[in-house]
Length: 78
Image 1 (cartoon, rainbow, N blue to C red):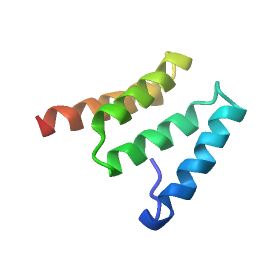
Image 2 (image 1 turned 30 degrees about the vertical axis):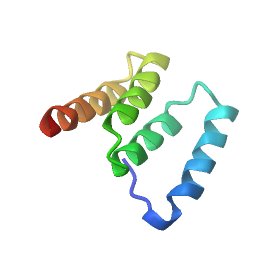
Image 3 (image 1 turned 90 degrees about the vertical axis):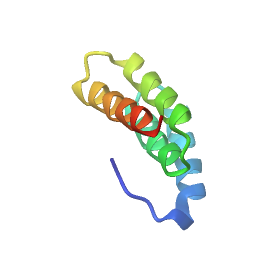
Image 4 (image 1 turned 135 degrees about the vertical axis):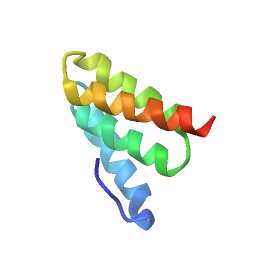
């Protein structure tokens, strides 16, 4: 996970959306966008983005770990 200056989140989202459209099979923009959804307290949105990243390459251990981390966050907030 990366940490972004909250004031720069809109610019970061724009850059990551551009990266996602330029390289739609690259998991990294999905993971970073998921983190930003968590900053916005949008756990469902983060979970969906993490799932999309995982679906691109299910064998990737990092993708599974990120999904599990988000699932734990969701469970702790219920």
